[in-house]
Amino acid sequence: MPHSARKKSESGYYHVVPKGIADQIIFEDDEDRALYVELLRKAKAETGIRLHAYCLMSNHTHLVIEDEHDRLAEAMKYLHERYAMHYAEKIGRTGGIFRKPYWSEPIDTDGYLLCAVRYTHANPAAAGICPASVYEWSSARDYLGRAGGIADTSMVLEMLGGKDGFIEFSKMSNATAFPFPGSRLKAHLSDDEAVRIAREVLGRDNINLAKASPEERGAALQLLAERGFTTRQVSRICGLGKSTVARFS
Image (cartoon, rainbow, N blue to C red; front, side):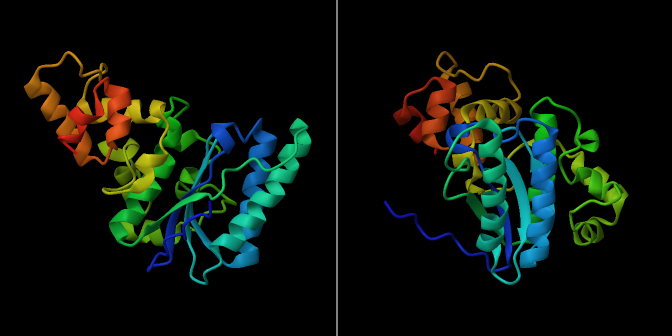
C-alpha cells in the first residue's frame, strides 16, 4: 500500500521522530550515538536544514528541524542511509533499521515550536534516565552553553529571553506531556509512554478505571480526551471497552 503524502509545513518547521523497526533499539552504545550526531552535523551542512533541537533515545530520536529549502527528505535519507549501514554491519544484519516512512508533524506557530523543543529535551527525564541538563545525547546542553554543539539555539533563546528563560520554560510541569495541543504524536506513543503520560494527566498511579465510579471515570476520560489520547489507546491502558471510552472522545 503506498504511503500517504507527508503533510507540508507552511512555516517550514517540523517535529520529526524516526523510530526503529518494530520499536527495536537503534543505538548499542555511545559510539553509535556519537556517529549519529556527527551525521546530523553533516546532513545540516549538505542540505541547509537548521536543527533547533534533538534527543537520542534507545529506539527513536526526536528532531526539531527548520526546512527553508524543502530538503528535509534529502537530509533524512543522507542521515539514515549512512547510519543504517554502520549499524547493520556492527550487529551483523541486513536491511534497514528505521521505520518507513519516518513520522513528522508540521509546526506552524511559535508556541508549538517552543513546546516541541521542550518536549524533545524532556525525554530522558521522563524515561527515568537523568535530568535533561546532564544528558549527553540531546541539545539541552547546547542551550546551556556546551561548546561545539550542533543545535541552532539562537532563535529559541531569543524567543525565551536567553538561557535563564530557557531554564525556566523547561521546568514547566507539562514538559513531559505531549509536545503541544492537538499533536498527532499521540498515535506514535508506545503504551508504556502513554501510561506514563496518563498518570501525569490524571495525577494517579493506578489508571485502570474499570472499577471507578461513573463520575470519576467520566472525569478521567474527559481529561484524557482533551489531551488527545485515542479511543483505542485509552481502552487498552485503562481497562475499558472502546464504546465506553468513545462517549467521551
